[in-house]
Image (cartoon, rainbow, N blue to C red; front, top):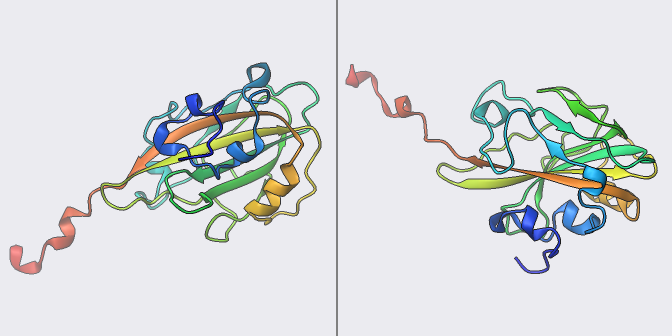
Length: 196
């Protein structure tokens, strides 16, 4: 896609380079990975497929675990934005908005409820389970931002409000890419009683 920042392109696969991503709007070459700031997960490596336990493929699915290194000194808060970068729409679909994370090295455990969350693309304040169509691969970008000032957003704020409040306040940013491919339909669904 056009208008994608050149400094970010090497960190994001071509199929996930949506110019509307939060990191494309808020990040800079100087802030990216500043001081070794990095986002990882014990459940998947960058570019790998998310386990079904983190997607709509499983009934009791939860958000994946995430870990991050220490942000630059003086960072007041960390903010996580997870977006589906595969869309052709002007703005990527938001799957998770989290803020209020301490400005230090830390983690979110698998399924952990974060301190403050905002509205995802469906208007609720939880991890929006990825649910691609059968055989379709979608790209999800986990984006972590360190801020120099604490946010003054109320829980339940939306993506636009969060992005606006982060303008000019980013001390560092990091990304982690994952994919999800829609699974096959339930093979048993076509069976009828006559088949027995």
